[in-house]
Image (cartoon, rainbow, N blue to C red):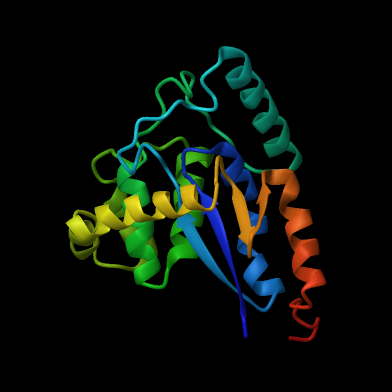
Amino acid sequence: MIQTIEIFYSFQCPYCYLAIDRLSQIENKYDVKVLWQPFSAKAAGHSHQSVNSSPERASYIREDVVRIAKKQNMPLVMKSDWPENEFDPEKSIRGAVVAADLGIILEYNIKMFDRWWGECENPNDQGFFIQLSDELDIDPNEFAGRISTHDTRERVRGFYKRGRKLQVFDVPMIVIGEERFYGLDRIEAAEERLDSLGVRKPSWA
């Protein structure tokens, strides 16, 4: 039986952007099925206290992600007033739900993170999803229609509820069975756990 793992993430989180390359390789390296679970209290319609709310913590995160992005040679353009006035994630999160249905979730996630954090483009600007749809080779009108349905909105709430049930408190978080691995620096530990389960693909695969 193929091992299923869940990756909880949010486009609001700069650490998820910095982790996306490594996270996207898990399915290539291991015989697992990855469930990408977009997780956002704001997108799910819940009030929440941001973990980045204190000025000291926000200042540290800005410093830290710049340092990591430079080390990983990744472009990073942050809003000057982040996180106080971050981009509204709701439409992007709903887009991820639809992208998964279309079988393009990984491509969608990579492009969304690149635009959000690599170029500081507002996903709610007019034309953003038209350009993104063109890059993904999908019909923008159909995509926009599916993003706006009641079913899609309910599924966003469902992802958030599932995360809370699994005690997801922040992202990025990898869930393997009943074990949680939180943060950019715990991806290696998650891979070690998968190695212990014997699901690494042979080098010739």
